[in-house]
Length: 312
Image (cartoon, rainbow, N blue to C red; front, side):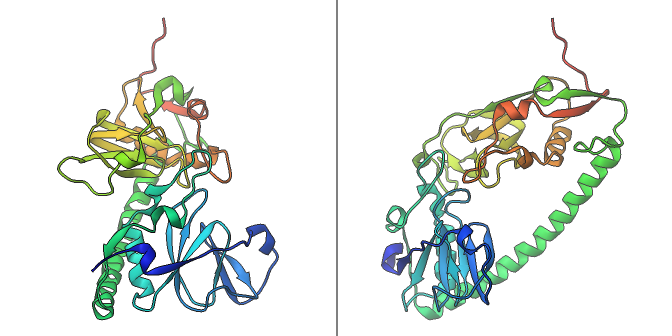
């Protein structure tokens, strides 16, 4: 049976501000956009439920929260009906990619009215339990593989520092010139892309990855670039993240394309940008962001084996 999200749950709001509970203590957890933020002596919900980040960084992110817990005002609660398992509703909400409904540039936001008409397939409780159990097993496998990838990534970073030194402390860096990133790379934000033109899943028409502030945002039917380039997310909860694009792709106004001006290995540049921990240069609290101007001025040590640009 095909149903709408709004027909299988009721919304729940909160007027609690994070600063109001800064000194609170208790045994009941309270959650915000980044997850668990503390404990209080009260609770809003006595059964498991779903919470959606509705304002600011991480808008659209979905959480499955336990009974006897609360949320702050930047979150929207979704209370499932009796014929819907909370875990099933959680997986549904994740797959619906609610963030695609966001509006607002400075502080993005979504509300229940924006996504309550999203449709999905509702099955009986027995089948819901089977699906939830299957998804749990899949997530366990993903977590295991991700741990392996994280370990390998740590190894790559360690090897980079061993060979070229630490790009942040600039310790153990030899035979290098100090330059600004903008001197040796062209950094350019992409073009404005309407949210409605970005599709969650790739298909025969919408097959080109579209990069936004937090990485690949979805897929579109036309591309702006072709090749292998580092891309820096410049807006959102994960601003400063670095992706390595390959092939044909599109980057939005929230993603910065990095093109070397000098001869250098793209993989080396990608690893360097990752190690620079670019998030530390962000500004803004509700909506963290990185400006191209700030990125241009970051000082790096360029090994002499790479050629510096020649200016006339």
